[in-house]
Image 1 (tube, rainbow, N blue to C red):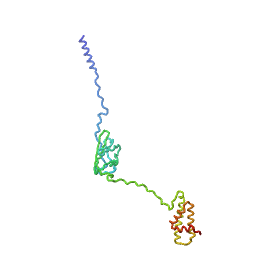
Image 2: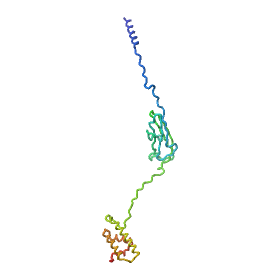
Image 3: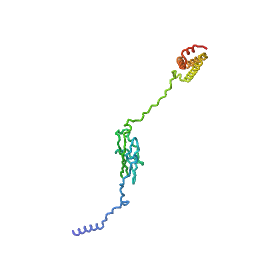
Image 4: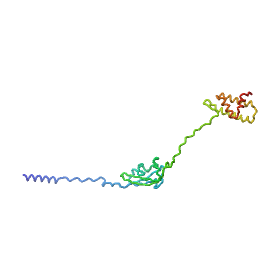
Length: 241
């Protein structure tokens, strides 16, 4: 009985071994072999400024970059300090060499400019140049001229002080003064002739001025400045034609 049991177990093992399924084969990868890794670095170089250029104020800092696939970004550095990142071609930015007026007054010196170009695989291309620089203009005490305030126009002073009440009659008063001056010049040429008419014009001028609100002293001062003497005005005021 024991022997028959052993033979039974041995037969079962042989049967299972004979009908065992083979392992499944490894499925092929789609597209065949794996694509090669991109190891080509972008090509980049600085187009502005040129090496050993003397720079000042604000200048263009530009670069040209290319790659076998595509350039994703370009970084701009000044003395290892990142200034800006540009993702659009043409790659450029305006470099303020004075750093907004904070650049030190160190005399003649150099700056190292660098650009880095990246592609989608993370490859990096780089280019550098050195440029020269002197002191910014403010180190020499130079500064832009201060803006001058516009000069205000000051009208000439009237010979007779005027108030707001008097302003509508300025033209009449000036015209009368010019007429008296012309009359005075004529009188000097024809002194002693037609005195009643001459004095009458003076009295009429004074009477008109008094009606406009001027004082007798103001009107007499105007006549004196026009060439009349105090004695002549006194005679005119007391003379009756």
